[in-house]
Amino acid sequence: MTPGALAVVVPAHNEEARVTACLRSLRKAAARAAPLPVTVVVVADACTDATAALAARAGAHVVETRGRNVGAARAAGVEHALAGPAAGPDVWLAMTDADTTVPEAWLTHQVAWAREGYDAVLGTIRLDPGTAGPPLVARHDADYFLSRRLAGTLRTWEHPHVHGANLGVSAEAYLRVGGFAPLPTGEDHDLAARLAATGHRIARTDEHPVHTAARLRGRAPGGLADLLATLHPESPAVSPAGHDT
Image (tube, rainbow, N blue to C red; front, top):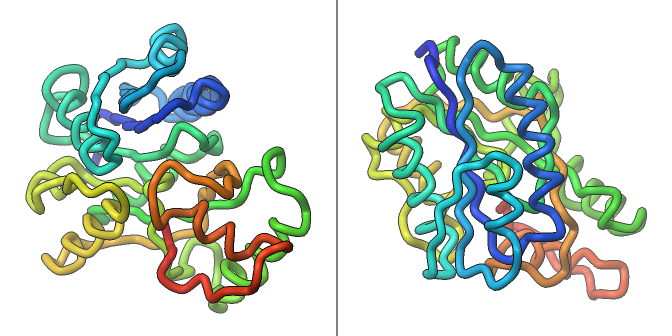
């Protein structure tokens, strides 16, 4: 497909310390994607801090939910975007998280994959060096990330990861498979699995990694924070298999 518009959905639960940096990075990515229009929707899910106010001040559309459920929050953000500011059959949906910053080429790379006929793009993450000490970054990269790297270019590496913080999908494919399920964790894996099972073309690329916070206590059970806790230098070594989130 050739996207005619882009919508970025960002679920957030009490992210007042990080949401401004996330939205600043998205503004730069949106400017790089011009003249394509870009709509940013922040879903403030059960927030008790200033997340919603900061997101609105930064120019994002804000949807407030109370379910404390990331799958439902992502779905609500997509529904809001497609019902109004990003309505149309040729919308590309990009997903990230409020504790994450994206590179300037994040959206343009996804658009390039879409124009090549891909229905979805699964990207990779790096730990934000500002939130993770060198030992944790090194252990994450060596034990979990780079150890799975196959020979080839960054663009063609068919990595095994699925991250809601770095995911893109055409609105048509998203709606065809039923969208995000209201899961408290693993909603990204669930969507990717349904896209693959129904024959949609999925690109897996390390071309545009995002930087995400290195938390040891996360917002969603079974997510990245649980993986990082097993990799923490003071924690026993535990196999990270199955924690690609």
